[in-house]
Length: 345
Image: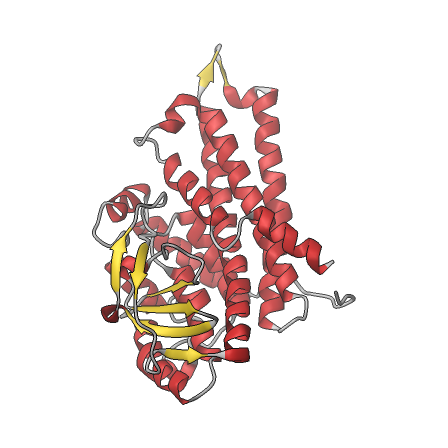
């Protein structure tokens, strides 16, 4: 691995302000009641909230300016993905904006140019969502409601309109993800990349998926810790708040330490991917492994501190615990990514 390259982890005022604006939107329109309503809906997410995200520029952040987007990178997106996790945002921001758009933008050839011309303006406008899947996935998250699917078949990458597929919905732990088993026929009309081009795109897509899901997991862990700390202050046993118990303090402190160690790793991975750092795959795997540990650890602490009420559907904590468990396993779990880092070393 290469070394010696310094990275500035400080975000600019505009990036921080964008996060603030997204938080203001989600605090108003993505409450736990809104998440429950979305999970119970046909799509699993809200077209109205997706339209608001598009109007703000969040959905089209990575879409080139010529196609109606902001033309920004993953460093600009990473805080928004983290905020999406904190809010429990049901909409497919990770799959569409962090994964599909950069893959479409980087695909070479006239066929890819035609796909971009058709789909990128629609994505930026909030008129289309994209699901992404590999041949190893028996069911593809978000496929049940996607307008376009980026799919791997025998080492090739295809762009397949949802209307050209047969989709059978599968059960999901996270009520927003809506996975489906997809049947489709590859053809020259769907082919986006083959050979070395496909290998490069699929490798980069996997790295972005590791970093992006890690960023969402940071926000999920943050929300779980915040909710659990608040509960520990309010819940009284033996005449005192359970947050005063040493064991509870230690559990929460350890969860917070895991989160704070994971956060710079995720930010570094976003920077490395934006700058084509040769070590970007390693950084992406480090990010996913640490963020998955932070989120699943926070979920475990949340369940321990909440006790029996944490197992109930009525308590909001399960909305974030389920997202933590689902995303920690997606695109390679912590064990897979640790093995990848070890192999690189």
